[in-house]
Amino acid sequence: MAKEYTFHDMTRRRLLGAAGMGGLSLLTAPAFAQRMIDLHATGGPGTRPLTDDFPQKRAMVLQRTSPPWLETPFDTFDKGVFTPNDQHFVSWHWADFPSEPDLDSYRLTVRGHVNQPLSLTIHEILNDFPRIELAAVAQCAGNSRIYMQPRVAGAQWANGSMSNALWTGIPLKAVLDRAGVKAGALQVRFGGMDKVILPESPAFLKSIDIDHARDGEVMLAFGMNGEQLPLLNGFPLKLVVPGWCAVYWIKMLSDIEVLDQPDTNYWTARGYRLPNTPFGNVKPGDSNFKLIPVTRNVPRSFITNIRSGDTIKTGAPTEARGIAFGGDCGVAKVDLSLDGGKNWLPTQLGKDEGKYSFRQWQTRFALPARGDYDLMIRCTNTKGEAQPAFPIWNPAGYMSNTIETTHVSAA
Image 1 (spheres, rainbow, N blue to C red):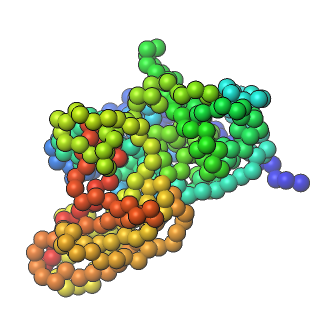
Image 2: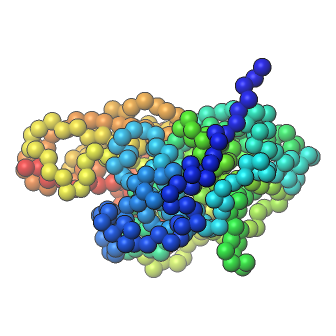
Image 3: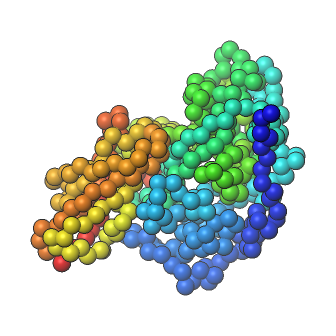
């Protein structure tokens, strides 16, 4: 007999923690005044509080309390390829979402251009469909926005609005197949349990094309790194769109609608757009460009064990290590430069956890003489796409993947 799967018992104490969701909007700066972190940003404020006052989360960089925006501390990325659940970044569009999802009454609806509308219980989701596991990076489109110069509006994320996890769930394709997608379907639209505060605000909905939705990789996830989803990361069910920006990864997923015409809702038709230029890059003040939707991730890489301002012993063998991801495909190579990009050295790649996952890299080097050095790290993905050396800028601060530079001194 097949094993019956259920969620762990979720008591109010375990789910909400000491602060309680109702108290999140009451958190104020003095509570964190002695725990600040420097994000090393220029052109504006660059310090943020560290907080562990959110449910199921330990120390996180606080960007905003309501809705909660919590950034993964950068040193977390040096500890392993998978981001711990209690330090996985958090970003909500609207602050009104359930603090205690009722699993007994929860239903996932599947409707629209289908033969058989569905209303699925948690029990059915856990037990009536095939299971899949897949490692994938969730990255906010505005990751690293704080480093764009000049500064742009929006959440001033440093490099921590990204996290990597091993997701467990069911294929979206299996659910759509059970509902029976009718001929002529164009897109699939997704909505969660979060609600708008003001009636004139648009509900947060996102759509993907029907062929993408049925590719077998897009997932309805209930598990994360071998545990159930944390509340703030989308419990009880989260849409995972591997290789695409996390804006599509709808949290507390409750509604799936198959459309037979292009989606006209604000967040698909107008929101989250960047210039249709190479790397989404334009000059400040430019306006003569077309906009396209933010979709796939692009290659990125980081040094995680050396920080700007560090001093390295001259001539001594030194280890550099870090993480990289290819965006919507795998990592082909990661190269390190010790001279500001004039020459590049190959690094050794770690275990391949899958084409959408972080991949660790490492190498050893020695700085030949005293002085200042610019260490640069560059990822090239399996499509042959490499990170650009020039600074990326666009008005929304989206999709930055400029080669990272770490300034160090040899002494």
